[in-house]
Image (cartoon, rainbow, N blue to C red; front, side):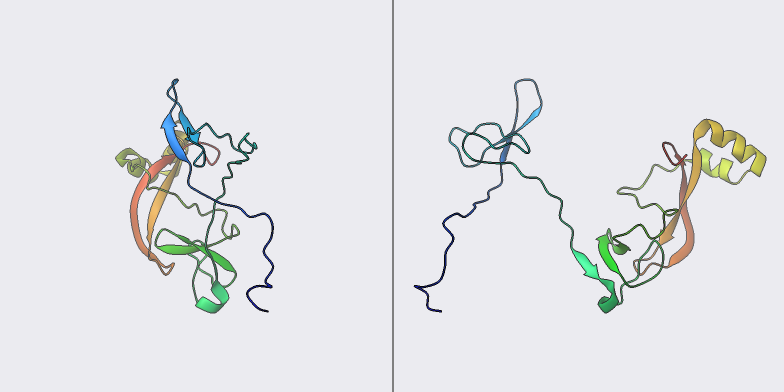
Length: 159
């Protein structure tokens, strides 16, 4: 096919990073990158200028069958995985009992003392403070080193 006869659609899209500013009430406002003066954009709505703010989260998925990658949660390979910090985890929740955290929790010396106390005392204090969780060190290849980095009080739906 020659260059002159190649098909070009009559409609195309352009994308640009929207601007941001603080509104009069102190909230963040997203501004249209195409209009001068810029106006506020609202997610999911078509604006008068034809701009629609679209927000999406993107992850790179690795086919672990071919890469030999091991999941740090379950310790198994295969399936589809995504990078998590310096390691990889399955896209499906392969080990619901193992949590991944976006940032390390604040360790507590009191949590360590209660965790190592007799079972009856631990159960009594956990009713007040929330479940005590140990944080183990894990290598990037998914193996546990056997070193406990610290303990923290888990509150919320898992407690």
